[in-house]
Image (cartoon, rainbow, N blue to C red; front, side):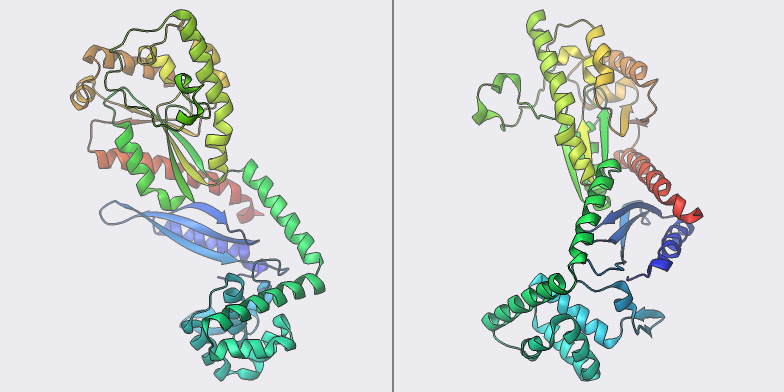
Length: 415
């Protein structure tokens, strides 16, 4: 939808108000690579409680610095009503379609037919619009493209038209290039200062279902983000210590540990060295492996995290003072939401009998003490159907996204 600048606030308010009236949630406002072209992501649940997403695209480009060069006022010029909506005028529709297909390098027989129909409807106005953007000298190429030609000729014509279009924009409007660079620089700063992704962390004793829940959340919420990413325990910027001197093995997957307490702990010196190695991975690896994806609108899920050092050092065969991981906790990035999956010890033990029942109870107590003073914690009971557990997690993520977006756009509603 092309929207004039004076109507942008009104359009945004309508999106939020209508969504709220339907019980839907606006969770993202994401920009394309085209300046001032963005889309809202709206979350809802269907009749059986499964998540769904609606994407509403908006375009506003007062300067014509976008990918297709047409100003918003040009797109709205001569608009006409159709079934209760406004649609572009015939020449604008024809020119926008031609520019879009030329820039993308894709022009099918369906596009030929559509352009021929528009030319037949108002040939003089359409030709005048073509000349405005491609110049009169390209008229014959445009006509050949519309009338239909072979694949090789079509490719050559599209290439010439793309060059002509770009040259005319650079030669006649050099200031637009400067504006475009400034806009992209501003967008880059905004994305780094206000990331649109999310980093979530799952913590629980064995049997909490972290892997199952994480996979379901990533799958069901994937359309709320540009991409999703699952990580186990740490960022893995640094390779496992035993592979440190074997670069060829760095990318080998870690073997699952089905007996976390089966082997005795290592010596104190080696344990402390390994702890600081892992600590360095959390501190140095968070930015490239988690924060950068967050900036790029990824949903990042950590299945386990640094907190396991405070809960179960035996799993990692570490002989270290208990105060050591506590002391360095403030230096470790926290993520956006910490999901604590807990419930009766018997329920977790029944799911996964890799550690004793008493140990599960001890770890649950440790997790409660650890998370008691944290503000970004969401507690989820595992003593319920998995689908309900996942829905609770989804609702918490949606709530964070919606609050964050409303905070960013609220000044526009009241400005």
